[in-house]
Each structure stands twice: as C-alpha cells, then as structure tokens.
Length: 318
Ligand code: SER
Image (cartoon, rainbow, N blue to C red; front, side, top):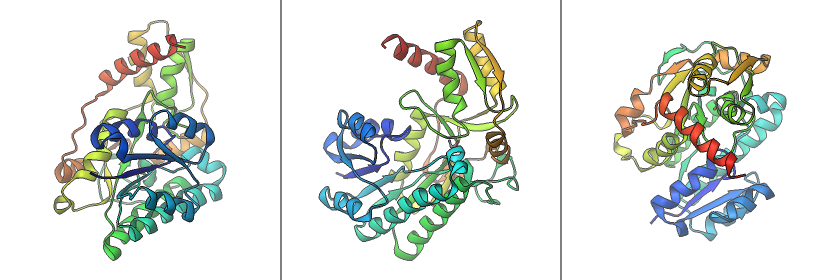
C-alpha cells in the first residue's frame, strides 16, 4: 500500500483530496500537511497531520522519511490574483515548494503530482479548443510559475527518472473549503452569495468564458492520472482537463432559473478581467482522455443543482 503526503492540504483542493485519498488508500496511509495553524487544526480532525513550511526542506524531508512516503501531492500555491499583488512572494512560495518537492521525490523515489493550471497559457495561446501542445507565454507570475513547474517536472522525469505527473486545472468549483485569490473564484462565491444574500456582485465581465471542473471530477483527475499505466503516457506535465466552459452570464441564468429572486450586478476587477481574457475559453482535453482515460462526469446543470443543495444544507446547519 502507498504512503501519501499531501502538502498544502488545508486549501480548496487539499481539504477534499484528503478524504478521497483515504477512501482509496486507507486512513493510515494518508498524511496531511500545511503551514498554517488554523488549517492544521481542521486537518487534525480528518487525518494524520504534520505542520511544516514546504520551503523548509529539512522539515519537509523529515516528514517524508518518518512516514516512508512514496507519493507526494504538492498543492502549495499562491493563486493568480494574489500573485499579482506580490509577484516575488508568489515565485518564492510556488517555485520554492516545487523545487523542494522535486528534490525530495528524487532522493526518496517518490511519485510527485503538482497541479498546473489554465494560468499557464497566455494571450498568444489559441483560446478556443486550446490544444494540449501550444504556445505558453503567460502574462501572470502565477502562470510563469506554472510553466516553470511543468518544465522542471518534465526535466526531473527525463533527467532523473522521477515519476512526475500533472494536470492543467481550470477553475475548480467546490463546497468544502473556499478558494482564495484566484481569478475563477467567482464561480464558487456566487453560490454562497446567492444563498446568503440573494445577490452577487461579479468581478469578471458577463461574457468572460473560462473552463471549469466540479470538485469530484478534479479529485478523480488527480488519482486516475497518478494510477495510470506509465507506458501509456506520452505527456506527463501537464495534461489539459476540463468538463465545462461558461461565462458569468451563463451561471447567473442557471441560478436565476432555480432561484427567481436572485440578482447579479458587475463591479469589474481590472486585474482579474485582464487575467481571464488571457486564459483559454475552452480547452481540448483529448490527450488526457486518450492517454489515461479522463472522462469527467459532472456537467454544468448537475453541478449547479449540487452546489445549491450542498451550500443550502451547510448554511442551515450553522
Ligand atoms: N483557479 C486558479 C486561479 O484562478 C486557476 O488555476 O488562479
């Protein structure tokens, strides 16, 4: 049985990836790690938890040794909008955690998953049906880190045989932990605001199309790729994955249909608008489908129904 370490486990993906991994590999085989006290408190009620800074390679390596880790999910990241507020910090955190993860994976023969993103693409990339292999010249520090991550991960595989794999996540919609500082976050916040206040002020233009995934599909993407037969992988870092593409106006109409009293207005955040305009409208994920059987289940209407149901239940339990 595998021993798995999730670093940055207190974030939007980690908090749901932990129970998903526990179901697959058993509770004794999944270690959650985060730097923040409040995240670790939350994680302790769910999993074996270790607190350390992923930039501290000594502390990180001690945990890898202690639990004889053979698979690492490196989820440490400052997202796109936050990154633009402090680009130097974004580089330090995103690349620092990546380099330590790669070095430890090399030293202790671990497989390594580090998510990439639609943020790895830029204005010059074809925006419709964005190919797997295409121009990647991102305009954000987050994207620069993600392209660097893809290149370094492929380099460690080619040069040292480290089993690195990753996907380019689009916006991820979920109802566990909130995302923070991303350009796609509106697609989560809108549901909380719809239920709490029946009103949402959207930071992106009405026609800003972006790819999205519902969390259960995102979790399957991680574990399906990590379990895939390596002989079938022509790509490694990183695969386009998507399940839906929509804009704020679409999502507004979907919620309004189910909740007629819901209203939305716009207060455009110029940085987010520019970031969203530079990202794909819809990606071609056929390589992921062919090479490791990617096949998302959740479409937009199913996702909207489930988000409204789950968040209403969460709010009424408060
Ligand atoms: N959700 C991320 C962001 O908006 C994209 O990977 O920054």
